[in-house]
Image (cartoon, rainbow, N blue to C red; front, top):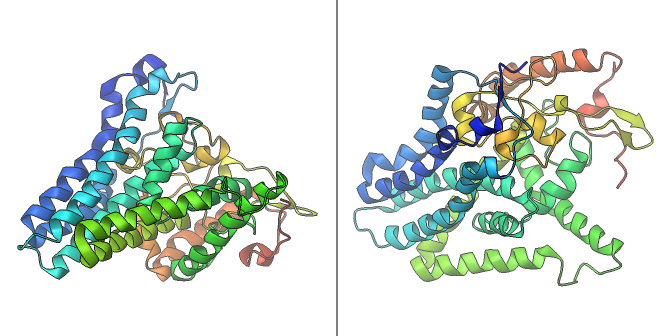
Length: 382
């Protein structure tokens, strides 16, 4: 259970929202790394992965929940950080491409490592903010979501996430529900291909229901291609072939960061097949929950993922956290868990016993999990 409920008037205070603005400090840090070179170029991944892991250990959990009666006005300071991040990321990525390709004090290896770090923040922060924005009805926010995804060459994530993942999470039709005992290094190439094709087919099917062909201009894949092409061209114009290569480095790292998070969010958690292609409704127990304070500041409560899938339209400040009786709990925050996911034996040692305990707790009547493990149950209805 939560320790207390945060009243709307308290939630609305700037001082309460400020911890979620910590991500903005990564922007000047990126420029510091670029201008100083040397050992400093390793600071971006060190801060996002290790500093916030240390802060989690020191600060512990945050079990408070916001009052669900909070209004849009109460959430102003929280919304603002997600809105201003997009232009700041744009200026940073392309400003650094222009700067780094002309900076004599940076060698080739330093430039690549620098943009590896840039990819860590465009993936950890940029795609995460895009995720928050794409769930909103406001057209400006939805555009900024596409803008951020285009900057990492992963625009189809919006279609896949909204039309496939949220609808079919925990079933064989959902690409990004990691299967029990499936290591990340098997999951990653599978999800790269399958998420693209499932996103395209989801948009194609939506158009078909309107009796339109997939080639109709309203298919967002045309917008995705145009936006990504524009970013590629801009990188080439600003930094030549070297600049284009650095842009692709950060995009690749960002995608890897996203799919690491996707991997851990639902690992081994499946919805019960009720027969005939029907599955139980999504519940908080179908996502891993984490209440670690510092990493939730960095990731704007993404780790309260159980509630996000239960109520996808809730903005991040009012996402609820759950106790162990209602949702499975990760032992550490995402920074530690994503590092563990890169070492499959370690990951299985940490997580497989927790998945088995979850199965015993919620589905004692299921004695044969082979079809769930292999995602071979009947596909849910479209």
